[in-house]
Image (cartoon, rainbow, N blue to C red; front, top):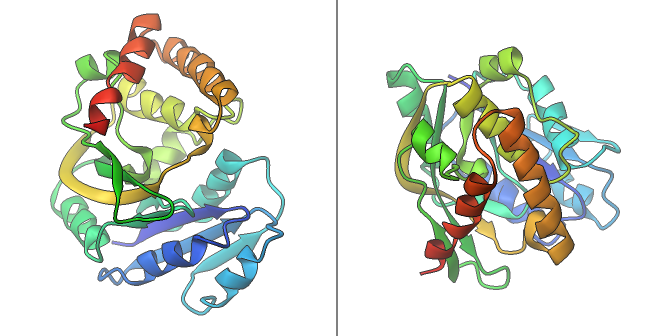
Length: 246
């Protein structure tokens, strides 16, 4: 089984090399590594070129944002399973993809997810937020549950059948996609109760009050369009994050 890993970059020269090394150091041999670079101007592309012989595909062109870039990656991916590792993220250890591949090879499932840790941007050893995803159910989805998107691995055939990221969502397209896949279309999934990905603190959706408000608006639209819930779900989704800091 080939697993396609997609990394989207835009002016990430400080962290992208660590992300690339995290993928290239995986023990699993059948990885198709795709990098979509959105015309970076800070030296990111030069960092990527250092590893050009070990990266399957590199696309460097203007795009309409992160989700458009991810969609480009999905379109050209040839692996049976697709995962995302953003340019500020890295895998918890070198066995992550091997573990994931073993489960897909032995279980008849459409998707898989695990746990994630937010770490300090200046000190990746310092954990700020521990996101233990827990078991999926439609009931929990309606209570605001969602898996950490960087740990969400999905078969390519699911994207082909159910669609990719909806670009009308500027910040919450990943939430919309998971509601669509898990809630509306009820694809099968399994929980791997291990930390799969570490994410440096400071994501787009939480960088400012305006972004938080925008994300809440988009989350609500996604909930209504996928017929999962409403304001109660949105409140629970934000409230349940608090326990991840303790």
